[in-house]
Length: 109
Image (cartoon, rainbow, N blue to C red; front, side, top):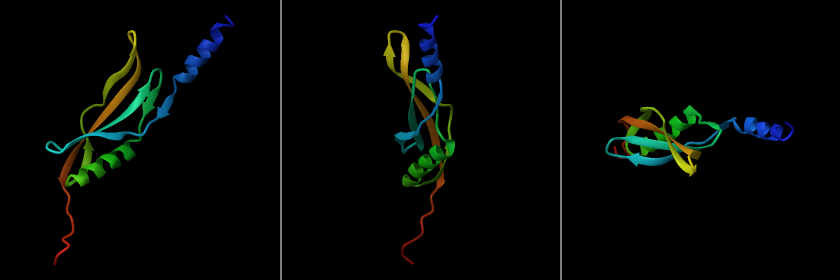
């Protein structure tokens, strides 16, 4: 029983929520889709700040000439590291669709 206690404690402590920053990983200018990705290790429940992720996607959309970004679809989870049949690390991709036309002030009058 004493040998089992450290293992149970390690599993309980590793199954916690971790905050991750989502970074731009793919941009499709034609369809106006921006994909942001963050990692999630085994036994972790990773989350990202929706407000910050939306701001990152909106900034990328504005660089393409759109006005804003809105969440598009569901998060896509992909296993990136496996050990046998276990998934050790996952990649979570969230998508945003760019909308509207960015209005830039005319430099010439």
